[in-house]
Image: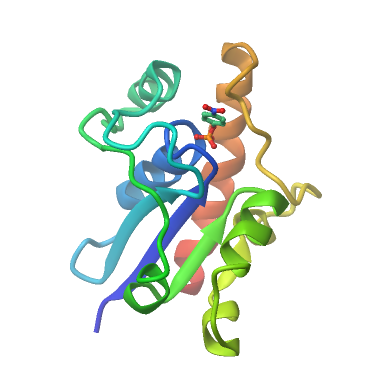
Length: 149
Ligand code: 4NP
């Protein structure tokens, strides 16, 4: 049976598209399905932020064909693991959950790192170095995640 993983951030144009692309690059697609979504709907239908596309490309990952979508309650049934980038995402997703089983699927992605950080910082208003930092944090988390799946 496939394990289904959903990466979630606020806009679904910076962090979670990268997380989707990075985890897909490490995972066996026959065994693990990966998608991403945002808690907000500002950018629905848009491709990822060009800075996320560029940092992924630097590491030989193509995320340019992804399109932004909004997280919805139906995602609790479709996915086994819902991994959020920061505490605000956690609160927003948990607020839509209807039972303990759904709440139990939601975790901070950085629980899977030893970075000491709990949140993947939002790089949207910062410079390009923010995207490099985000890439490294997500990459480390995905290495550990893949060992557990
Ligand atoms: P993301 O970053 O949550 O990593 O996709 C953001 C993207 C867009 C906005 C905020 C954060 N925004 O305010 O439009």
